[in-house]
Length: 486
Image (cartoon, rainbow, N blue to C red):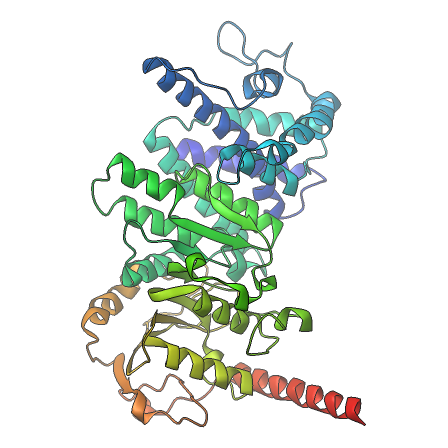
């Protein structure tokens, strides 16, 4: 692990010097495509060896002139880099930009179907460009990546953890924290509560770096000794995702591949552009795990795809998830805590729909800075589709420390929640609310812990300002509609 860690640090040091890479986002993007090609080379070697051992032939994916050992790391007789054959400087940059990338992009057109690694190769290189401006820096990075090995289970495991760390650092580096990185202790907790089974179709329509899908894969892979058939189901028929942004899409695919899913079923698309009225029963999922984008406003034409019109991205995603869940399907969704109390018509109607069509059995209230740098407070909604809500069990995660970059959420913080959630037990941090006690004019689900502060919970100032902004937007829409009639 120390060798891998030092290699990643050395790669970042090289990229920091390059004029084409200005941020952590660039570092991981550029590291990803080079890592992927090295991984692909090791994968091909393994598959070829396995085929030879079983007396089968193996058709190689990459043409000889584009193989890693030819253009990236040709070796001499002693097994060291052959400097006479290894491209560098402008020669290397020209080869990568004008020959390698165009060749790899074509894989998407030539692949037989979308669930093959060939198709994923084409998709990845259709979304990326080489940003490393110096061919000499590119040579340094390639040499460093060539030192890494993806052959053994231990090596792949260590590499996947380091890649997760890079995603985490990227998130902590700036405004993209919540977008790219959901804390893994939280994801693992959500997966444990939702408890997927082998054979379930598991979906994340805002997959980002694919943290939910990766953790669900690990959860199921380690749940028991899997048969070859069960492992095949996990590989090809269990995990599905959609992602709008190019970089997040590429990172998500790379993350899943490094965790052992060879051809991830992630589609590069705007999930919200799909009209939910068109979703058919056979397209629905057993499990939905997601952390949709916190902010953002969607255009009017996107809102037309949903029965409850709102510009709030997370509320549109929630409608999408409810519609995409099978009867009896289970979900764990992270959402801003303002969803529970916003007084605009869309929020009220969406809470009403959720309670009437699903059993919203658990709400986990998370502390500030659970999402480092994101500046929002969140809750997790756990629900099952197909029957109305009778009781909601709340758990308020109260910690004795403030969360932050140097003090992030850990699994021990959530241990009591997991234990109490099974029995819906009451404690200083948990309580039950009967749906009959709900005000059906507002469907307000605000977190009001009766066991603390005499049950008085003051609304966050940011939530109040956001509510005012939503009302102002609604008023403007009404006025515009009136003007249109005059």
